[in-house]
Amino acid sequence: MIPPILQLARRFRALLALGAPPSLVIRFWYWVASAGAREQSSHAVPVLGALIVAVALAGWPGGTTGTVLLAVLGLTFAIEGRFAWIAWSSLGAIDEGLEGLPAEPAALRFPRSHMAFPPLMLFAGSVERRRGIVYLTAPGRRRCVDAYLPKPPARPGELRPAIVQVHGGGWIAGSRAEQGIPLLNHLAANGWVGFSIDYGLSPKATMPDHLIDVKRAIAWVREHAGSYGVDLHHRRLRRRPPQRPRGAERKRPGASAGLRGRRRLGRGRRPLLRRLRLPRRGAPPPSPDS
Image 1 (tube, helix red, strand yellow):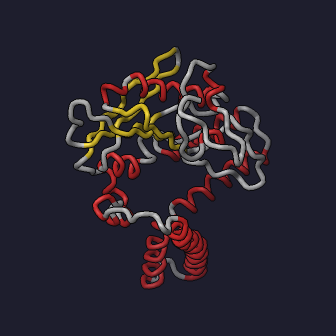
Image 2 (cartoon, one colour):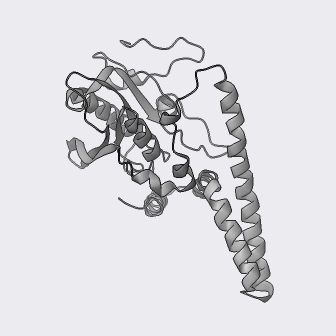
Image 3 (cartoon, one colour):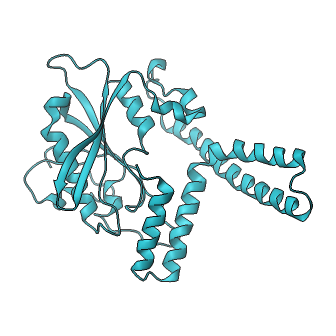
C-alpha cells in the first residue's frame, strides 16, 4: 500500500506536468490541508495539547523561537479544537433525526474503544478478511477488492446483505486498504458481507474510467454472490463524499456526486454508464429493476 502522503505527492507532480495553472495548484493543496485538518481534528487536539504543555514546561527552545513555536501550536490547537467541536456538536442533530426510531441493541453498537484508539479497528476477531482479490485484469489495469466476511461462515442456504465501499480521495488519492475499515468490520461483525474496492486514480485515469471500474467491481460482486453468500436483493453502495474545494464548481451528475450516499444498484442490460444516472431532487427512489 502506498502511503497517502506519497500518493498525493505523485498526483501533485503529475498535475504540474500537465501545466496546471497556479490557482489550481493552490486549490489542490488547500483541499488537502483543509480535508486533513477536519478529518483528524478529534485526534489532533489531545496531541497538540500535550505538545504545548511539554514545550511550555521544558522551556525549549527558548527565546523568540520558543515563543513563535508556542504561538503556532496554540493557533493550530484552536483551529483543530473548533473542527472537533463542530463534529461533536453534530451528534445532537443526528440524535434528533433518529428520534422515534427503535433503539439499537447495545450488542450492535460501534465499540467506543475503537473511537478512542483507532488502531483497534484493524483487529476484529469476529471478521474474516480476504485481501487483494483481483476483480479486473486488463492492459495497464489491475484492480483488486478486499472482502470482509462474518465469522462463523454462513449456513447452507443462508444469504447476507452486502455493502460495496468506494473509498474517497477526490478521484486522485486513497486506496481500499485505508478507508472504511471501521464500517466494514462493524457491519461484518453484525452479519453483513463487505467489499472495499480500488479504482483508477487521476490524472492517469480520466472520467469516466473511475466509474467504469466501480461498475465492474459491482458486476464482480454480483457474479460471485453465491461464493460469498450475498443476498442480491439487499445490496448497498457507499461512496465517501470528497471534500470540494471552496469556490470550485460543482460536478455534474456522473462525477463523484453520482455515487454519494447509499442507493439501490441497478439491473438490466442498458449501457454501463446509463445505470449511473442521478435521480432528480425530490423524485421517488428507483425501483430495484430500474
